[in-house]
Image (cartoon, rainbow, N blue to C red; front, side):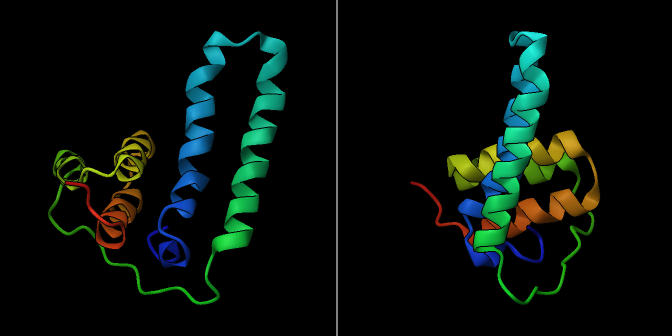
Length: 113
C-alpha cells in the first residue's frame, strides 16, 4: 500500500484488513473452517490487489522518527474507519514499512469530520 495505494485508496486497504479480520475471527470458528477461511481471505485480497493496483508505484516515504503510537494517533485523528482499521492491521504487522503505509492512507483518504 505504501507504494501502490493510489490505485484506489479504500479498496486496497481491504487487501490487508480483510485477511487480518479473518485471522482474528479464527478462534471463534470451528477448526474445520480455518483453512477455507484463510484461503477465501487471501483469494479476495489477491483479487482486490489485481483489480485496483496501479501500473506504477510511487516512491516509498519512511516514517522517520514517528513511532507506532504516533502513527495510530494520526489515523484516529483522520477519522476514516478504513484508515483506522488499516492502522490496527499495521500495528499487528509491526514494521516500519507497514507504518509508512498507514501514513500514505492518511494522505490519500478523505478525512471524516
